[in-house]
Image (tube, rainbow, N blue to C red; front, side, top):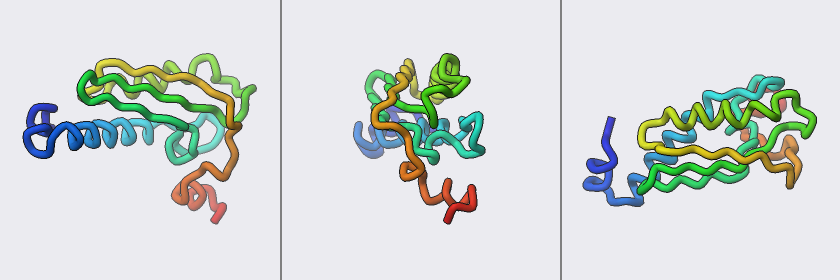
Length: 118
């Protein structure tokens, strides 16, 4: 796998930031909603993803499908652990937000197809 230094030499800091962002998104796609068999990224639960390639810091604002979700207390830590494991990430912070409320309109086309909704 490329190091941050080799990525920056090849395409500059913007390339390195984009590459790290893609690795984080790939990791998020391995985390599945406990009630709907779709990953949290394609389900549209990730509202904001800030990646700082210089420091390796990742900040995520995400929601759940319902405020009363039984995993609301533990799920952010699950997502943080997954993102922390990504090469190049030094710190991951996940914050649950409830505004705007999640709706099916946030789902990707792939998620809609997977659930037979298209």
